[in-house]
Length: 288
Image (cartoon, rainbow, N blue to C red):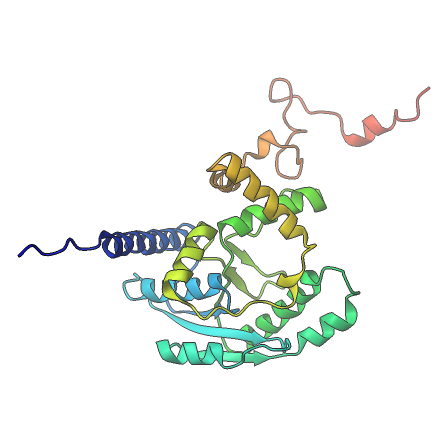
């Protein structure tokens, strides 16, 4: 008797999923190594929002920890901002099911934002400041040495263009930074991961996604404008976002125009001729 041929779809799907998981682990592991994100003995606060990116970040860090060359602790932390309809049970149920220690911080930032920000205006800036303050305070009070956020490659590229278009500066969210008060180290383990990969990973893993009903629901966000532009570029020229992301890690100060980053004044004709200072040039500003 001839047996029916096995359906090739499950095998192919399993193969693609294995490749995806390996790619994400490699990218996160490489980012951790390149930027010194996690050190021996670290206590890492994994900020879990309920979105695909932070779920994936936690999942991948848990996998890497099993064979990591250093010992570190992971604790999931969620900020319950008291948004109406927020399903409070989802994150605790999920984290208990995978055996991850966690803390839920309760702070009603939702009411503050809705009261302070005029209707129709972007809420992200104030919401972000309040959220950051609550997380930093919790990190200080509980001895966390690193704060892990789930921003990915596409977030970094979008932030670069937001700063370029709306704030006239070349800057993005770095993979690792020290907070303004000097007290906290923030890391972004997904800094080189594509959003498309994270979407596919979340769909495969069936994370219990909690949609944002505050900032993420606003249609007039600058980030959404930039996102549409990048999506159009990627459709027209596939690979463009990856090229831009690589450029963010290959900065040439001498080929830009910031005198604070490169000594243009000291760059004389033969390398040893000092240029006149600004006051000498400005003194002639009022000539006939």
